[in-house]
Amino acid sequence: PLYFTHCAVDTEVESAFFSLISMIQLLSQIDQIESTSKQLSNAVLQDSTDRLILKSKLLSHQFNCYQTSLHSTYLLLVNVLKLVTQTGQLRYITLDIDQISGWLDTWKCEIQEQRVVFRLLHEAFSAIHLGEKAIAALVRLLKLYTENEGVEAKSDAHICVISHIAHPKIFVMDHLLDLHPIRALDGQLSLELLHIFVDGDLSDYIEFYNNNMDFVEKLAVTHEENLRKMRLLTLASMVQVCEDIQFAQLTDKLNLQLEDVEPFIIEAIGSGLVKGKINEPEARVSISSTINRTFKEAQWQFIKNKLELWQKNLVSIQESIKMSSHFAIPVGGG
Image 1 (spheres, rainbow, N blue to C red):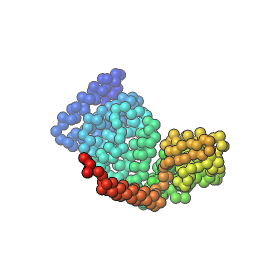
Image 2 (image 1 turned 45 degrees about the horizontal axis):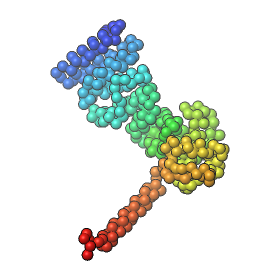
Image 3 (image 1 turned 90 degrees about the vertical axis):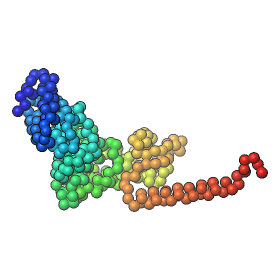
């Protein structure tokens, strides 16, 4: 037990703890450093006092002073993440998913150890309200499951699906369909709902909602929020077919009143989903670009055609430059 953590003054606790860390660093054998550091880290985490912020600061300092090349740093990281989740605060350490992924490679962590870290990362980012990072950590976790193991992470897969749907700035979700735990949701309503948000339209969602109202109402995202996102996604699909769209088409397809169309388009442009201009006198909108909700053979063919066109244009420009150089007048006349 760490008797010094019962000191009334935090600075006294910190001073004693920092002295311990310095002493550990002076040990001559790597295995002694690792073993002693593990014991100290576990002792802090298991300490019976309720001073979570202080314990988080102590462990974060220990982690920051430690050599990230040593495998025992893994345990320090796990304990830090547990305290971030408990306290809902991140003050003394930087959590970068790519950097942590690199550490896991350096430590040669087993798959199960990696799963523990990414699950804790998801919980930690959720606790400090960093939604996009929490979702990214969850996707990294699901990638660690093979086809035969996918069923083991079905609950995580469900959370991943709903988190993507609920996030107001995430519109592209087709990459989730390649994850084995997501595929293991086959036959479940969450996967059916994901397919709608990947390539369905508003009418598909409304039909799903009418048939599964109880399921949708229990999700961590409201029906109204789903309607908003599905209208935006439906607009993105419409633009793929026709770049000039009449307001009347939008009222039908998006189930909007005519007076709500223009504010909706402004919202769509503001969200970054589309780029375009509103022609108010003609009651239409011209879209110059939008996202691809899915990236399949058709999208690759579109890029191929664009590149071939650019190549032809460059050749044409080069030929024009060569032709003009033949008719250039030398300096000085003649």
